[in-house]
Length: 127
Image (cartoon, rainbow, N blue to C red; front, side, top):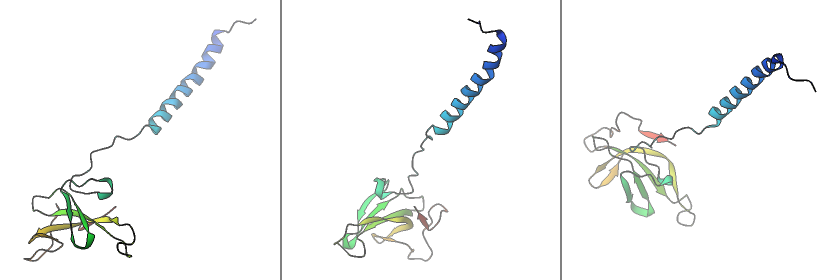
């Protein structure tokens, strides 16, 4: 039997180093990304994330409220029945709109004119 020489060991070292590097790259590429806490201003009724609470509306409508901004405005996601009314299951709408409480109801406009200000964000957020 032939004993391995020091030259054989030197030839194997780059291959082992390459395999180790490849394994490290695959591990880092497949590792899950760290999940951040959701923004408390943006509600997600489907996930049950309503930091400002849920409120009933007329006609079977439900509102999922985001945390209010200093101006009192907030993003609101709406749940309602489909076009077939109560004969089909309802669903959360795929967007949230910037609204404010005006005379005990949610409004997209303000009585003194203008739109609610949701921290300088867009009027509507699409999910």
